[in-house]
Length: 51
Image (tube, rainbow, N blue to C red; front, side, top):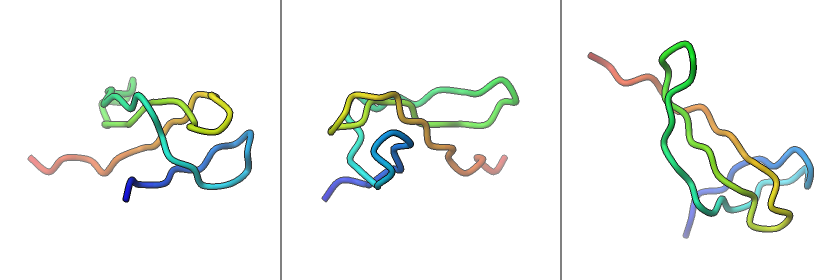
């Protein structure tokens, strides 16, 4: 089962397709992809990696 992420446009949790790990401006990791239902960009902030 895939993880579910909140889509602001659908207002529900949906699967993310084409998910890519990115780094935000403040250096924290995030996951960016598209909603499987409507195609809107979905962002999810990941936990910071402990050094």
